[in-house]
Each structure stands twice: as C-alpha cells, then as structure tokens.
Image 1: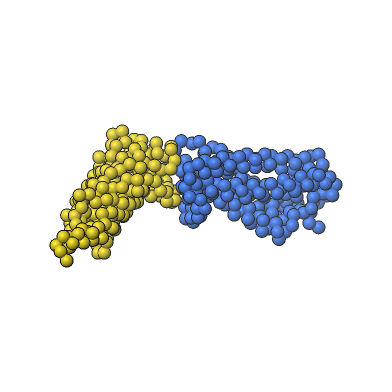
Image 2: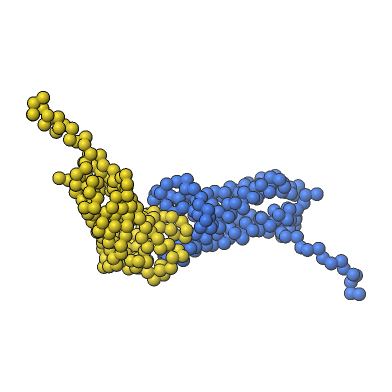
Length: 187
Length: 187
C-alpha cells in the first residue's frame, strides 16, 4: 500500500533541497566578501533562510512521525539498507546541526539573529571572538560534510533508478498528473 | 571634650560625608566604558571605544556650574570584527587620518530631580559640530563617583558613513552612545 512518499513529504523534500542548495552556494560566495552594505544584507538573508531551513526540518520531523516513509525494497541487502538509514540519519542530524552552529556563531560574533529583521532569536552565547572563529570553522566543515552526504544520497538514488531499476527515485519525485485516457492508437 | 578631640572626630567623620562640594573628577580609565549601539539590518549591534579621556567639574549642589570635556580617540574603535574596525576608521566613516578625535564640550547642566541631570553641549566629529543633550545620573560615595548616561546621535549629522553607506537601510542613522564613567574627585 504505502509505496510512495506522501505529496507533502515530496514537497518538503524538494523545498529543502532547493533551500539547502541556495544556502550552501550563498554561504560559499559571501564568507570572504569585503565589508559593504551588500555583505551585511546577504549575511542577513542567509541567516533568515537558515532559520527557515531549521523550521522546515522540524516540520519534516513532525510529518515523518505521523506518516512513516515507505519501506525500502526487500531485495536490498541488509548492509545497504543500513547504509541508507544511516545516510538519512546523517542528513537529518546535519540539517539540525548546521543552522544551530550558524546561530551560535552569530551570537559569538556579537550579531544577534533577528528573523526577517523582526523576530529576535535569543543569544545563547555571549560575544567571544575566539569562539566565533571556532564556530565559523565548525559551520563550514559541517557544510562540506553535508555536501558529501548529499552527493552520496543523490548518487544512491540514481544508482537505484539506473542499475537496480527499482522505484526508490520515482517515489520521491512529484507524481505526474494523470494522463488523459487514450482513445486507441492511430485512429 | 577638648577642641583637639572635636577636630579629630571631625577629621575621622570626613570621609563618611557625601562629597557635596565642587570637585574635579578624573576617570578611572580601566573601569570606564564608552559604548555605542547601532542597528544593522534591524539588529542592534554593540561596539566600544578603547581610548578616551574626560575632564569633569561637578558639584551636585550647583549643577549649573558643572563643566565637562570628553575626548574620544576614534581610531580606538572596537566593533568586534577587525575588518569593520578598519572600515569605520576609514574615509567613509570617521576618517581618522584627518579627524582623529571626537570631542564633547558641555555648555549647560541642569538637574532633573534626584540624582538625575542633563548635560547639553557641543559634539564635534569629522569637523561637524552639533548640539547634543545627554541625561545622566551621578552617584557618589566619598571621593568616588560614577557618571552614567546615554543619548542618541544621528550619524548623518556628522557625515559618518558616506558613499555606499549613506543609505540607512543597512546601517541606521540613529546611534546610541552609552557612557559609564567611574571617577575619582581630585583636590
């Protein structure tokens, strides 16, 4: 019965994928910009998008708890099933840890995160230069790790599709709208 | 009670009396703080000046006779980020090469009731002089006293933040200046 992800889970997955791709690219681009109003703006937008990604991962957790994902194919060897679950656990752990380190590094650098310039998120850490630099490194390395795990995740999905020829990739793609009924061929 | 004993008792009691006489106060530099808070993308960010000096003549019984001169070494600005310190010292902001100091010279002090007072005076930064008014409190214990207060100045009034920074969208015009000056009364 439960062979596909729910349309909500599919939408959340691809929304998150797009958001993470943008956040990662912007993060790489912005970190060594010379100080300018543009830099201050793009840092703020990056933070707001990061908070959004964090909220989105909480929504995904809630949805996943209420709607269990479809099982992996029985034909998959146990070791690969374990690897798939470990990979998904790592993705979720990083999707939580990366925004948290971003928030903490912001506090340590003395610049509070204020969601969309409106909602202040409390500083858990006081201003501390050394800690700020340390957390910047942690934030960057967790991102490189995420990029590596995402590459493995996408590679595995493609392998399932092209080599194993199962429905692992298809069940996470948006369902195509139902085709109009055909009226015979070459009438 | 002999005259000598009375004089001796008076001498002993002296330090317990409030320092209600006119006095020239010298700052305790290591305990004094001159900080500023500005809004960057809607986020309040704090910085400070490391070097400043002040000469304050103050008698709580005769506030109208008070005089204060405060001199700030603008190159000692500490925003918490090295690249921001460099930027703010540069020609778009303080232009410390041409205008190394900010200076406040009081013109009037009036009592506001209790230990609250208000100092008016001339603030000069980057060659621009503006009238400013700063409410402050005065708390004395023996020969030690603390002057503490804050006021808001508008950076554009002094030409602070020019060129690409002139727009208030990223860095707001209003800058809150906070001072806390523990001082010791001289002879």
